[in-house]
Length: 352
Ligand SMILES: Cc1ncc(COP(=O)(O)O)c(C=O)c1O
Image (tube, rainbow, N blue to C red; front, side, top):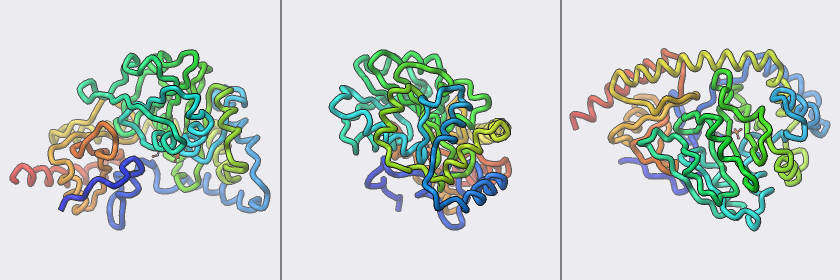
C-alpha cells in the first residue's frame, strides 16, 4: 500500500527516506564524508575541546571571504539555527506580514511558526517554471524568505529579481545553502550590502558536514546584531568554527568551485538521461538536485525503493503534490543505474 503523507510534512526531510541498502538520492549532501584535509583539521581540534568556543576568527574568515565587515556576519550552528535566530530576533508583534516563497525548504516556515509568526505563502507556479516574479510578493510584506537556488525546484533566481524585493522596512532572507554548488555563484547576494537583506549559508552540503552543524548569516548589520543577541552562548562548537575557518581559505574556496563545476557536468548528465526516457527536469536550473514530475509519482518512488534507490518525495513541500520527485545529482554511473531502474519502473507503470 502507498505510504501516507507524514503527519508533520513541513518537518519531513530527505534523511527520513534513506535506509540500509538504498542508494541515497534523497539527501543533497555532496560527499559521503568530509575531505581528508578537513577531517584532519577537525581531528586536530579535538585537543582543544576543554576550552569554550570563540567565534572571532571564524567570523573574520567569513567576512573576508565575502568581502564584508565582521559586523555583517554571524556564525551559526548550521543554516537551521540561523532561521530560528531570525524568527526570534524579528518579534511576531513587530512583523506585520511574513511571507515565505514556496515551494522551498520548509524549516524557515517551521521556525517562524514556532516563534509565533503568522506566515503567508507565495506559491510559485509550475507553469512558469517556479520562477519568482518579485511582483507576486505582497507590497506590505515586511519579512520575505526565499531560497536561491531553491530546494526542491533548484531554480536559481536572478540576483536582480531578489534585489527588487529589498525595500525600506522589509527584511529579506535569502537561503543560499546551496549557492556554493553553483560555479562562480553569479546570483549570490552574500557579497552585497543591501538594506534589510540577510543571506543564510551552510557548510553542510558541499563539505559533507551535516552532523557538525556549521553555517552563517551574512547581511544587514542591524538584523545580524539582533540575531546575535538571541543566540545562545557558545552555540557554535569549536570544531564547527574550525571547519568554518578552514572552508573559507582560498584553497578550500577553489576546491568548492571545482566541485561545483564537476557537479554541473553530472547534473547535465542526469537531466539528459532523464529527458531521454521522457522525464523532464524543472529548468533551466542549478544545484545538486533536480525536480521531476512523473505520473503516479508515489508508486514510482516506492518501486524505485524496491529496486534500491531512495528519491525524495515532493508532496511534503507546499505547492507540490505526489507526482513530484526530487533526485540528487550523483556521479554518472549512479545516475545511469537509476535511469535503468526508472526506465523499468515506468515501463511497468504504463502496462498497469
Ligand atoms: C535549502 C536548505 N537550506 C538550509 C538547509 C539546512 O542546512 P544546515 O544543515 O546548514 O542547517 C537545508 C537542508 O536540507 C536546505 O535544503
